[in-house]
Image (tube, rainbow, N blue to C red):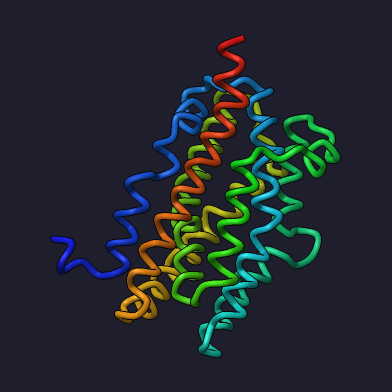
Length: 231
């Protein structure tokens, strides 16, 4: 299918595929068991702050959504992220527990510039753009999460002896949940992004968010893998 006849969701999918997170050298090294535990710990400390901010991204999309029924679907996503003792930032901290990291070292980690850029990019796209752009930002991430989570679990079990249900809970939860979120998100991208006034903004948001996820991993790779190799 040529670009001229591709739907807006197909164009966004193509942008995501070009810089899919599983293609990044950091995740490739994870899949091969080549990361040190210290590299995983450094990653966990940085990534936590994206997980912590994610409910704010969803909240921004919810506030921007013009349709009540669609808002209700976004609200279900927000409730899953934020509510109760099984909230997703807590689940990530359980993963850091499995890595034998003190929680305060995760919660109070000094953030890399590209971690800050990742969070700022997603907050801006979901809060300050249109709902079409907010939905696109969420879709760029959530559509990738199920496969990323599966490969992370496999690598953690095979190479790092992390196989406790509690330690892997964050990833297990996101395999099923984000399959549904991605399905809903793609529907929103198609419905709202096909408006000619939204199309360019949607595509630019997709590029920005995909790039922010990729360069976040660049930052972690440079800090935790490249410097260690150089040393």
